[in-house]
Amino acid sequence: MNIVTTMLAAYLAGGFPTGVIAGRLLHHRDIREFGSRNPGAINVWRTFGLGCGMIVVMLDIGKGFFATYLLPRLSGGESMRFTLILGLIAVGGHIWSPWLRLRGGKGVATAFGAVAALYPLGVLVSVGVWVVSLALTRYASVASLTAAFFTPAAVHWIYHPAPAEMILIIALPFLLTYTHRGNLQRLWSGEELKVGGNR
Image 1 (cartoon, helix red, strand yellow):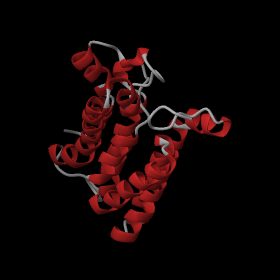
Image 2 (cartoon, helix red, strand yellow):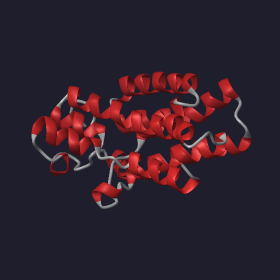
Image 3 (cartoon, one colour):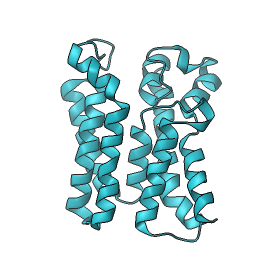
Image 4 (cartoon, one colour):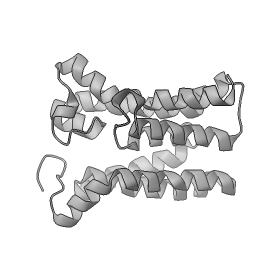
């Protein structure tokens, strides 16, 4: 696989609409017609239950993992910098899915999968941060952004990546902040739903 083909594969894989497909296969409904109308795992969880939500989370993590672990090997091996770029492309595909007219989820699980393939211990620490943040606040958006911003620090602390690689890792939480801009507005106005449905 050449560089362009590899990047295209990362985008198409990242954009694979797992939430929409899971909703249709398991519940014969389109997740985009319920709740926040977002095809991401959190809306699937709230609409179709924890089991379906967990399936979507694992598949979304798998998309990121595929982009940074399997794709570079299929293409003959690439630099760590290019591998991280593939991860960013996969997250972009999830957010702007080519299968959903450039609409998609918020990219959290796909981003975590992409980084986990390269820096598993750093992401393991961040998952712990996510769990603690969710338990304390009960806001999935707060937990996701807290863990996302903690991830570069954890990766740097454990693995000491090169500066160019750190820049790409740091770009992820800012991209996720953009996708959560609606959540941040609802948090500010007191309208954001907590896990369980209460404000």
